[in-house]
Amino acid sequence: GEDVEQSLFLSVREGDSSVINCTYTDSSSTYLYWYKQEPGAGLQLLTYIFSNMDMKQDQRLTVLLNKKDKHLSLRIADTQTGDSAIYFCAEIERYGKLTFGQGTILTVHP
Amino acid sequence: DTEVTQTPKHLVMGMTNKKSLKCEQHMGHRAMYWYKQKAKKPPELMFVYSYEKLSINESVPSRFSPECPNSSLLNLHLHALQPEDSALYLCASSLLATGELFFGEGSRLTVL
Image (cartoon, rainbow over all chains, first blue to last red; front, side, top):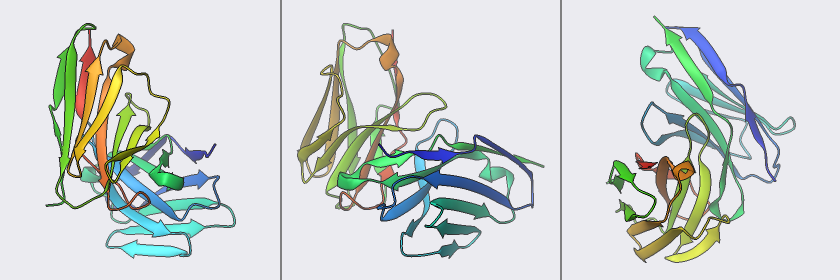
């Protein structure tokens, strides 16, 4: 089956940029997603990128997609303490099934 | 209205109880989902409903029974659960089965 991998932890200082990386295996994925989960909460869709795009920017968020290497990244500019959360990348299979990575715990230090 | 609303937020039940989790959306989405999430793990798909018909059952035990009474509502009926079924149950919806999913805040279930 499909496999999505992420590094488990990232720690940054407030004001720095954060880069969260993800690799996936299904080259036929049409969409790739980034979700944020704060403690005790559900998943919040942050952004997504269509597979024919290389980059997508949305305010402080920049998504880069390297289809050749099956590598996806999420850059958060000017990281704030409120950005501390678990970040999941996900790819979509047929019939609406999302496969999530293990999640990256982002900790932002003042 | 861009919300997926789940009730109850917390549920504690014994192994002989029968309870239900409810999910509601008014975004006109035609695909609805149940996911299960254990602590510090990614969500795992349980069921997908597309146009009110069950389209995916990820080999979920029969003690979990989904129901989609109409395009806005999704229920998960629980019966004879085990303590290992304790988890956060997340409902999601999407416009179509290949669109971005919008998640509710989840129902945290504890089985004693």
